[in-house]
Figure 1 (cartoon, rainbow, N blue to C red):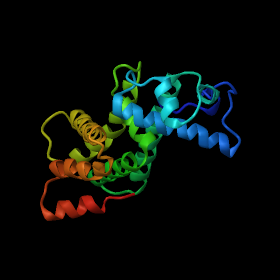
Figure 2 (cartoon, rainbow, N blue to C red):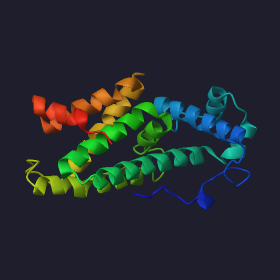
Figure 3 (cartoon, rainbow, N blue to C red):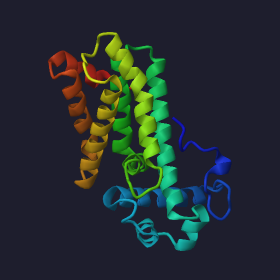
Length: 220
C-alpha cells in the first residue's frame, strides 16, 4: 500500500524543497500538521482554511508556506502517514505467523491505538474518505485491498463463517473502522476510539468470553 508513500524528493517541503534540518524547523512543521489534523478531523478539508491553520498552530503564513506550498500538500502528507501506518501494521501482523483471523484483529487493534493517540494518523484516515480532496479515496481503497487477502485466508481456513463476498467483508470492516473513528472525532471523544473498535471486532468475532479475551490480547 504505497499510494502516498512518496520518496523524500517528491514530498512537498515548501519553499526550501528539502526536509527540515534544524530541530526548531521540525517542531514548527509538526505543529502545523497537528493543528491541521485537528481542523481537518473537526470541519473537513474543504471547511478548513490556511488562516484557520495558522491561527491554531500559532504560526505565520510565511512559516506555513516555508514547509508546505499549499493546503493540499498538508493533506497529502497526512494521507501518506496513514498509508504508512497501514503498511506497517499489516507487515507486522503477517510477520507474527499467527492465523489469518488473529492477524486481522492485530491490525485493527494497532490501527485503533494509533488513530486514538496520533492526531495526524487519525486525520489521514478521515481524509481518505473526504470527497472534497481529489484522489484521496485511492488511499482508502488501497487499505481494503491490503486487508482482503488476509480476510480471504481466514475464511478459507474455516475460522470465519462468511457466505457473502469475501472481498466485501474486508471493505465492511474498514468502513466500520472509519465510522468509529469519525464518530469519536466529531464528538471530541478520541480517547474512546479503541473501545469503539473493540466493540466492532466483537460484533465480527462474537461476544463470548473467549472471543473477548482473544481480542484484548491482539496487540503488536
